[in-house]
Structures are given as C-alpha cells and as structure tokens.
Length: 389
Image (cartoon, rainbow, N blue to C red; front, side, top):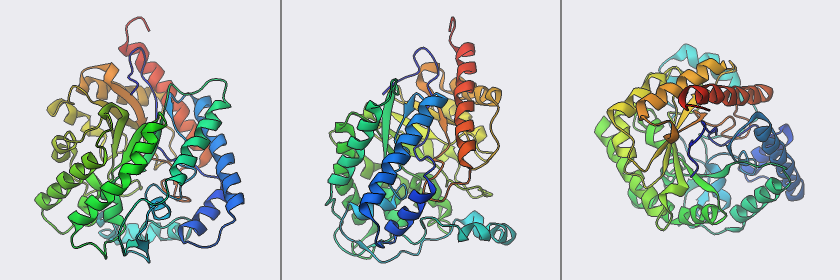
C-alpha cells in the first residue's frame, strides 16, 4: 500500500456520482426488475470512464472505479451470492427518529429515485458466493479503462462490503444465530476479497457496522453488547482475509453517510482498540464532519499500530460547502500531529459521494470541486510537513 513518503497522497472512500441513466437502471436492478443488460453494461462503462478521468484531472493519487458497476456499497451482493430474497425491515437511525422536526424536514428527500438501503433483500437460504464472473468483469473493465489513460493513479483500490454490514442490513431468516450468519458471509466474501487483491488492487472493506450500528440495531442495548458485536465482526473480517497480506487491505468505518444530528454516535475512543485487531494495513476514518472532527486526538491516546496507515477524512461528502484548501491542510496537519509521522497519513473523504445509486447529497460538479480542494489542501500540507518539498 502506497505511503505518503514524499508528499501527502490523496484518495477517497469509494463511491462517486453515477449518471442519471445509470441510477435509473440500478434502481430497477436492485429491485430485481427487468433491465436491458447490454444498455446497462454500456452505461457502466461510460460512467466509469467519466469518473476515472475526473479523478485524474483533480489530482487523486489513489483512485478507483467509483463503484459505478454496483447499485450500492452492499446490496450488490444479492446478485453475486445465493440465499437472498424478499425485503428486510431495517431500523432507522436513532438520531433521525429522535428529532421529529428533522424527520419532517428530510421526508421530501425520500421520494427521490434511489436504491433503498432500508429494505434490502434478506437471507432466506444458504449464503454462498456463486457468481465470481461479476467481480472479475468489474476488475477487468476498470483495468481496461485505466489502460486508456496517459497517466494513471499511483495506486488503485476496489471496495467490498464487510460481512457485518451485510448481516446488519440484510436480515437473517435462515441461520440459527447472527454469529453463524456473519461467519457464513465472511466465508462467502473470501472469494470477492481474494479476486480484488489478485487483480493487483488494494482492497477496501466498507464497515459502517463497526460504528453506525450503535445507533441503529443496538440503539436500545448496552454499549458492551455493541462492543461484543464489533469484536465478532472484526473476527469475521479476519477470517475472510485469510491468506491476504494486511498491507493490501484498508478498512473504512463510519457512523452513517448522511447529514443528520449524529448525537447518538459511539465515540471513536470506544472503538479504536478493537479496530486495531483487524488484519488490515490502513484505517479510513471520518474526521471532517462536525460531529467527529475532534477525534484526531484519539490517535494520540491510542497510537496506530506500527504496521498501519491512516486515511484521514478531511472532506465531508454530505454537504455542498466546498472546503477551503487551508481548512483541508489544517485537518491533515492535525491528523499527522496525532499519528506522529506524515508518511503514515493519507488525505481522503469521510465516506462516499453516492453510496447507493441516487442517494448522493452533493451536486456532481461540487463533488469534483471538493476533490480538487482535497488535492490543493494536500499540497499545502506537504509544503509544511515535508522539508524541502
């Protein structure tokens, strides 16, 4: 995994804006409705080519395909695995239901055309990875598009869902226990994780379950119950990563990629020691949004293990405010001060910009402006942190 050895490297958390046509087709696909497969393939290719070109133009060092081939960051597994059907009834995040006036304010947004993350299919049979061709095609198509560019990324990554978020959001109606379900998912996802790494990409495992579930499915339970859930899900990730070098994997955690109060979020202090048990080479952590901007200090209290890097979230993907480069640089410098070594910090985003097709809260043109500010801020931080740069 690339380090910021001579300058602060930039990356992001994975999902990037999809075209309007792609959103509409992905919504139909997520509902298992008929879709013109040839038209879908053409739109995925065109949309992927567009987001790759934009990333390179704004100066992203460690980029990806923007998740254009997936309907969302986790429900895509229903098309690659057996055992899913019907619809789940996912609990709504506690901070949304706690403030009725906020819920009323946000209700118009729910009428948008988008993939639903609260009524995902549920497990009704044995969960097995049955169609490796989709991840192989996704990787191969991205490689082909990269090959068209005159100058590519320093490194590429590919995202994949964690066993824990699938288990949390895609209800279990088959396995005897939630623990058994999570381990079955970990075994199935080994196929996808191995395929991504075999193509030479860094694997990013998306794990909002490790933070967001505290104010979702564990909202009415003791903190210790949630922390046991975190421990078990980290163990499941380690099982799924068997045989993969930790330095080829980064793990993304977040408290939910939505603009809301977030007053019930679990503190990062409660999580960090447990996250360090994961066999990964980097953590991707939200540190830009107003609720978690102070938590860079956690890395001074709980130092990163020597083998780990930090991708510090310094851009908020839930607001159309474009961060000033000086603000970005300040955030990077605070993260570096807490970690103690600029070479171990990359600058990124708190989360994705379109985690489910149609769900993005930032206008597309503004997304690229925010990523351009990320590059400019990283350049400022580089001049301050690397002598002679």
